[in-house]
Amino acid sequence: MNKVKLFIPGPTYVHPSVLEKMGTPMIGHRTPEASELQKNISMKMRELMFTESNKIVLSTSSGTGLMEGAIRSATQKRAIVFSVGAFGKRWHELAVLNGIEADLHEEESGQPTMPETVDRYLKTGKYDTVTITHNETSTGIMNPIEAIADVIRKYPKVVWLVDCVSSLGGSKIEVDRLGIDVCITSSQKALALPPGMAIASVSAKAEERFQKNGHRGYYLDFLTLCEYIDKKNYQYTCTPSLSHMFALDFQLDRIMKEGIENRFIRHIEMAEHVINWASHFFKVYPAPGFESLTVTTIANTRNIDISALNKELVQKDMIIANGYGELKNKTFRIGHMGDLTLEDVTLLTDTIESILKLK
Ligand SMILES: Cc1ncc(COP(=O)(O)O)c(C=O)c1O
Image 1: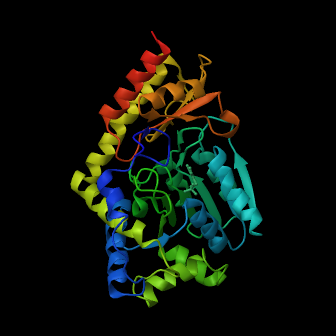
Image 2 (image 1 turned 90 degrees about the vertical axis):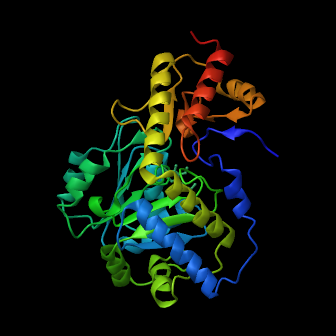
Image 3 (image 1 turned 180 degrees about the horizontal axis):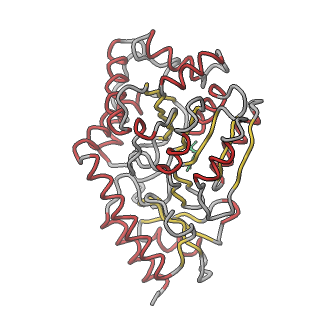
């Protein structure tokens, strides 16, 4: 049994009781029990995503699957992709590879997407779809989603897709109040489940757009995914990972038991601890005021050997992540999301201090 606790920004630590639920005996995926399971998950996800009536779509894929399906099903005219790192840029690759017309706006590394920039593009009237990364796991930026929502609200015909893959379940994303049309997350991040399932909320406006565009693709077609909820009473297009569904249903009960707001507070406390620690001994990579609440990207100002540090950490049953892509060795990342606690992250930072003999 692997005892190493994951402080990487996904997959994250999974509680043993949740892992156990993955082993629930199978049921048929076309049975009333399967409908009931998917319906229960949907009701609880709505609560966690602060949406009254948006549809909850499940996908037996990782989050990228739903990102691909969403940009393809939603874009009628042209999409504008705002990127603050590798995962933001992925939306653009997905669009291009699917023959969807899209433009990319990239920020200087470490800088957030600002509402004025979004306004500048939408004002042109060229775009009917916009994508934002709420929490960019490579650069450790949490974008100012409230201020961006204020801008997007001025353009009611635009369909707004948000990547909340590494934040949903750890920080508050009020889908209805913000007006997010498609809000996407993955199981292996702040929801603290094994990887292999993605979840999205879909607004009535987004669904109307899918209907106008008609079916696009098969497995990841949002129109089909939505139709199966209405016409087939909360069922999934193909054979879903029922194991993930059992575990997700159970994990959502655990989240409700902890209290959604308490869970957000726990994430804020962990983030504050890691950000303060990193600011003291190194430097936090993202621009001040835009630090993520679920993952801290730390500039490697001491030029430490990150793989050597990780080898020593593993001896103590912990592991962190190197920087992503171009930021490898220039930065390293500490994930503080899901079911980790302030005690866990404090033990981690204390251990790093003692390994590196930081003063
Ligand atoms: C911000 C962000 N978006 C998208 C993805 C892609 O998600 P997945 O690996 O679940 O496909 C990731 C994965 O790390 C991510 O961190």
